[in-house]
Amino acid sequence: MTQEQPLRYRLITGPDDATFCERISALLEQGYRLYGSPAVTFDGTDVIAAQAVVLDDRSARIREA
Image 1: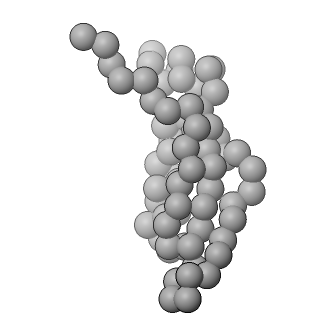
Image 2 (image 1 turned 90 degrees about the vertical axis):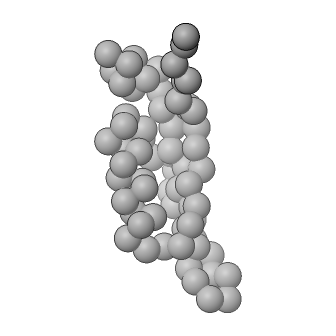
Image 3 (image 1 turned 120 degrees about the vertical axis):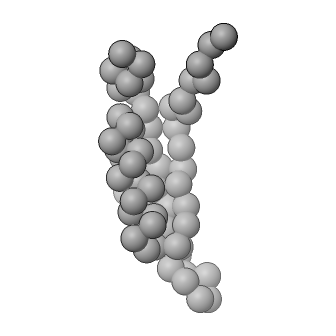
């Protein structure tokens, strides 16, 4: 049985709050790195943030070890 490979690119979105920051921080701890600048918009009620993260080949190998 093979393990599921982690996605190499992810776009994380959600309300700009502590939970969003915790999600990004957890991905950084898993070996992802930020890709580009964050984006924010206002949906009429909340500020919504988006941040792309990537997992390069080196990070994936370290994670599997």
